[in-house]
Length: 263
Image (cartoon, rainbow, N blue to C red):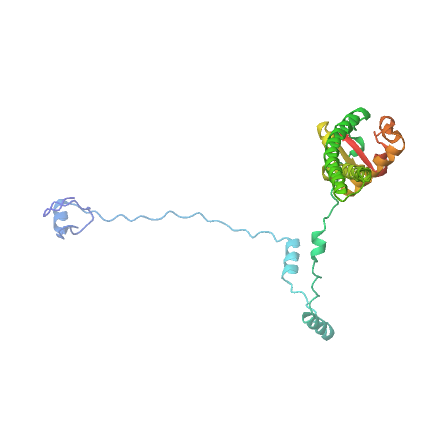
């Protein structure tokens, strides 16, 4: 329906215009409009019967057990005093301090440089003979040089003091002999104790080690040099033992407890 005043469209059941407020009752009577506001009624809800659930006897018993308050026994006076004393008991003593000595000591024994020394390839008689020949040439050169200067010095000293030349020569020979022995001992002990190799053994890739797989020491090197002297006193039999020994050991090797291995 249109308002005759402002032409605003309004509902037929409205008595006044929503826009200008014009009274529409006379206009609706003249037009024969008698509309009323529709009233909506809610639909009736279906009735629903609620049946009580069956009560399980087992659940009822459990609920009774769950909600029952257990009886709390009051502690006795002696138990209360004991727990009170335990709360104020002295703490246990601290553990003893760890000494530095126990920390510094290794937890295991280290293996030697050659743990399988017995199974290593050994140097035979001839290759050791060649190494000894090379060492002999080097020693001969060193002993000749030292012996020459020492003998010349002793001889000249005897002549300058007015001594007999023959006595000076004898003295120079004796001193040169001991110097030769000392040079040979120093050469062998130094190189063998230092790295287990003389110059001849270095050239032929041989090395002297202890039978327990440890490296050589100067004490072992000196003991082996004494074994050399004993092998020489047996007319070379101590050296020949290298050719017939299973581990290629000479008499000097057995005395010092050494192997000559091939690198």
